[in-house]
Each structure stands twice: as C-alpha cells, then as structure tokens.
View 1 (tube, helix red, strand yellow):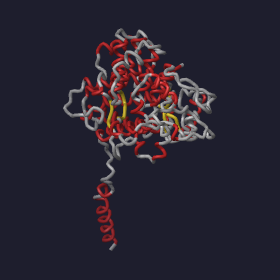
View 2: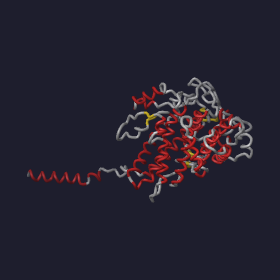
View 3: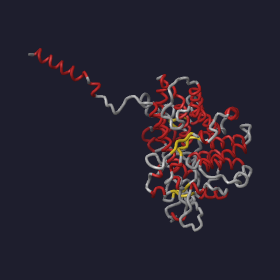
View 4: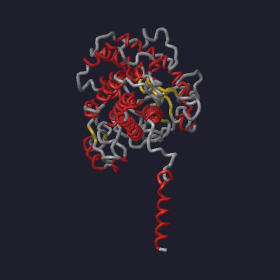
Length: 474
C-alpha cells in the first residue's frame, strides 16, 4: 500500500510539472520585445509628450504665450508645474526604452540596423535633458535592473563630450548606418519610414545644433565647416525629422483633446505680439486669433506672469490659433527641421565659424519657416521688415528661429539662455526676483528617491536654484 501511494504522488508531480512552463506563461505579456515596436513607441511617446510640454510650459518660459489664470509656473515658480512643466519623467522613460533598443541591436546581429537610430535618439534626448536641467543622472541611469537604482549625477560637460555622450553617440550612430550592409529593413520608423539616409541627415543637423550650443566653451569651427561643406544635413522641409498629428483622436495634438477651459488658458504673449507686429508678420494669423472684443480683427498680447488680482478678461486677449485645436492635422511633432538647421548655420557664418554666405542661409531659413507654418511669405518681407541687415543681424537670426519654433517652446527658451535673443520681458508678477530662469529645477521626487546624489547636485546648483547657469552657459 505504501508503494502504491508513492507511485500516485510521483504521477501527480510529473503531471503537474510536465506543462508547468506553458501553463504559467502569459501569452499576452511577452518577455522579448520587438525593437520595431519599441522604436515606434519611443519616437511617438517622446514627440507627442514633448510637443505638449513645449507648447504649454516651454512656451511660457520662452514667452510665446501667457497663462491667463493664476499660474505659478508662468510667474517663474518652476517647482509648481500646472498643465505642463515636469519633463523629467518623459526623458527618462524614453531614454530607458531606447536603451533597450540599443542593447538589442548590439546583442543580436539580426537587429544591427537599429543601432544607428537608437544612438541618435539617445544623443537627442540626452542633450534635451541636460540642456534643461544641467547635471543629471546619465552614465548609471539606465541600469536599474542590473546595477543601481540611485544613479550619480553626471556633469553636463561629460554628457556632451565623453564616450557614450552626445557627440560620441552621434558619430557612432552615423558610422553604424553608413557601415550597415544587412538586408533587414528598419521598421517602426515613423520619422523617416526606414530611410537610413534620413537618419544620417538628422544626426548631422543635430551635430550642427549641439556644436553651436557648446560653441562658447570649445572651438567648433573646424567641425562645423566640415559638416557645412559636405552638405549632408537636413536641407529641405521634405527631409524634416517630424511626424504628423491628425485632426481627430487618438493622434491629434493634445490641446485638442483637453477641455476647452484648458485650451483657453493660453493667450498670445505681449513679447510675441510686439515682435510679430513690428515685423508685419502674417504668421500671427496662423498662430493666434484676433481677440474677441476687437472690432477690426486686431491681436492683443498679455504680459507673462499675471497675479491673481489682475482681473483680466479672456475676450481682451488673443487665443491660440485654430491650428492648435480644431485643425491639428496641420501640426507636426518637431524633432529637427531644415529651417532650424539653416538658422544655426546662418549664426555660425555670422560669427565667422564657417565660410559661407550668411544672408543666403538666413533667407532660406525664413522662407522654409513660412512654408512650414503654411503661410505665404510677403514679397518684401526679407528686403524690408525682416531683412538680415535691418538692425542686429545676429538678433534677427535668433529671433526668426525663435518664431519658427512656436510648437517647441523649450528650444526658444534654451536658445534665449545661450544667446540673449530675442529680448524677453520682465514678467508682471515674478516669484523669482524679476529674473528669467536659466535652468529647470530637479523634481521633488528625486530628493525622495535618490537623496544622496540629489543632495550633491542640489549643492552644486545653490540649492537647486533656477538661476544657476548650465555648463555651456557659464
């Protein structure tokens, strides 16, 4: 009898474990991720979220628009984000997912085609992150599953200049694409539809952008001259690194999906109003609407940073244009464009960093910017109101780049910090001693989750001050 029980137990164990792995595998939760799906997700998620972030919080910092309600962020209390103002998790979530793509491309020769795009996206997002915050977790930041969940803060200089930094990843990304000889196509690519040459042009435009960004700290002339002479950068709007929004959900611009009260919270800023009006710039009709109380179709901007007692009326100020709510199929998630590339090259030429004609580059950038925003360029715009030599040439270049980046407000703010242009205004009721912030503060969750390293970074920024310059701005 004892032997019979033993046999029965053995049979039960064998029966229970024979299909154990199959039974306990969730077929709806795969353990292996497809890089094509992840690449699509990274590009879309980052582009969609940062377009919204850039147009809400970024546009307040860059003074494209003004928050009509009592908005602490618009008054430069940057630790109080409202509809936007905390891009930190957007960067880290997508940098983490992008690192998975990069690792897969190096572990499996069948996936080598993904290395170049993954490195370029890593450089792009890392630069965007450090340009906003300064020193940030980077070298240890994407190894929480194997090494540490409390990464050190790397210096901005090292993030740009060291191995596996911004420039290194751009160079390695270009090399990986140029040397790729496989037959497997790049899938999940919603920027260039698998065109590897498009990624190379994107990377070279980013190199121009970031070389100009650090040009106050290092000599970049020779590198810029080489890229300019080779001409293999984004040179036409048809080559832009963008993907299109749609008119309807779920892929419309997010402001179209919010309640109308959130959309109506943003109006034309006094800064943008004065600049566009002084230039007789017709793009104002695409980007904004005449204010409701106007009897002659005029526009009116509001100075940023109003306080609770201002008592302003929505009807007295210009709302955002219909392109940002009703017709968002005309909008793009903007990673890098030909117009921005030409403005950067025009700046380089104006400063003597490259040998080429500044005015030609400038005029091309302005022409492409009007085309990008689907507005006809007035015949005399480039010879009268917005002529390069009408005033300060460098200011004109940066101001036109600032206008063109109206869906990408963080860029306008970053470039203002680097160049001082355009001349932004002292806001109405500042909570920062009338100073325009020059970095984003580390979010409060860092103090709780990574306290030791956060404390060191905070000490290096005078208590996480928004008035301490980043490395390239020192």
